[in-house]
Amino acid sequence: MEKKKYQDIVKKYTPQEDRTYHGIVAFVIGGVMGVLGQLLLDLYANWFHLPTTDAAPFMIITLIFFASLFTSLGFFDKWVAWAKAGLIIPITGFAHSMMSAALEYKKEGFVTGIGANMFKLAGTVIIFGVVSSYLFGFIRLVIFGG
Amino acid sequence: METFFYKNVYLNETSTVAGLYEKNGPLGHYFDKTYDEFYFNEKTWEQAESKLIEESIDIVLRKLNKTRFDIDVHISGDLLNQIVASNYAASRLRIPFLGIYNACATSVEGMIIGANMIEGKLIHNCLVTTSSHNNAAEKQFRYPVEYGAVKKKTTTFTVTGGACAYLSNEKSMIKIDSATIGTVEDMDIKDSMNMGAVMTPAAASTIYKHLKNTKRDIRYYDLILTGDLGTYGEKMLKEYMELEYRIPLKNYKDAGTIIYDLDTQPVFAGGSGPACAPLVTFSYILEQMRKKELKHVLVVATGALFSSTMTNQKLSIPSIAHAISLEVVK
Picture 1 (cartoon, rainbow over the protein chains, first blue to last red):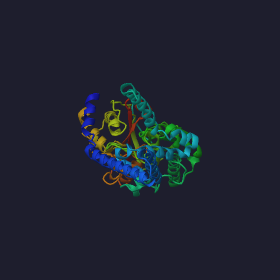
Picture 2 (picture 1 turned 135 degrees about the vertical axis):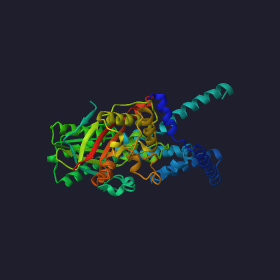
Picture 3 (picture 1 turned 90 degrees about the horizontal axis):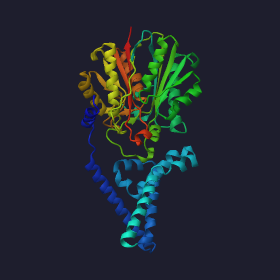
Picture 4 (picture 1 turned 30 degrees about the vertical axis):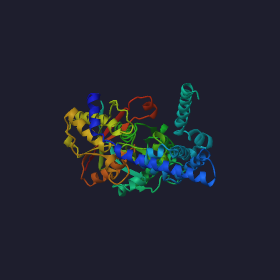
């Protein structure tokens, strides 16, 4: 059979993913995460009498802490599998990816296991985050003069 | 010469050890031993998988009332890098050992190698083992287990289990009748989340060659069992056989769809892994053969020869399938 003809068969029997449903779930959960972040931000700003910019790290740390804790307790993966991008895109996804990799490799030692594998998934985010922020910073400098 | 006929090779005894999801599946009560968790009192998943092989051998030897000194050759393979589960089990058993790899087609590959040696009178008997472990496979091939990575509907779920077969020249009810070695097929499928589509061409080509070389009609077999194509692969294979070879697939099932309850268990398109085909064959199918409900069964174990290194290099995934024909005698 020709490859093209076979690929048509594959296409015919490969089911469509429920993109609209997944999109709505991710949108709502992602939105809830945003609201939660804003709520924490306002709370910290009020409690500690801080300007919002200084309260932001506290909010981020709180979200990272709870995502990592829930991952370690073993149920955050089920939430992620359901909410998908809704939990992966916010900072919770970043923390979760590091914590899950660390848990996975802890039996292979501190250095050769956790150290070498913790950034297996998050490493890409960091690298391209830094590269793109440099790039956009540079563009901003050229166009707007800083 | 891809098909062999055997005059004097028998499948005397088998054993199956399975994990939690398989226990909760429809075939749960057919397995010799099952576990409720994923470590089996070992420290890591890899070591747990190795234990599955050791235990499956223990159970077979106990059933046969033999010791490891009575076994001529041990043939084993699994999904882990460097087939470590087999190697570490073999290092403790110290039976003359052949390590093999054909991904999820390993079980039948091992049976063919063993049967050929027995038919050639080089050995009297052999043990063929295969294993797979869901978490160990996820860790090696995909994402960390606790990450809960997003999956497509066509993804298959690696079976946790170990299976052992004792083949010999001593007469028994189940005879190994013939076997066909498959060729590696590649239809340019690159989606590692759709292994059914990857393996279908290999399964089709092996089934076709087997029927052609044995001059048998498809209806000769009471059951044709593929290894782990999953629900969507099943449909693709039927259409492929019909279009390419004009053979309507009758009496056909896929082990990956039998081992789990696809409606209630979170397994997507069904089971997969080297242990999938033998777990189903050595428990449920052999039971039916012993009751003479099935007399001629063709087991076609299918393997996706997948490596994330090669798919990251944008190469497609090659696949293989081997067929072995079992029949009831007496």
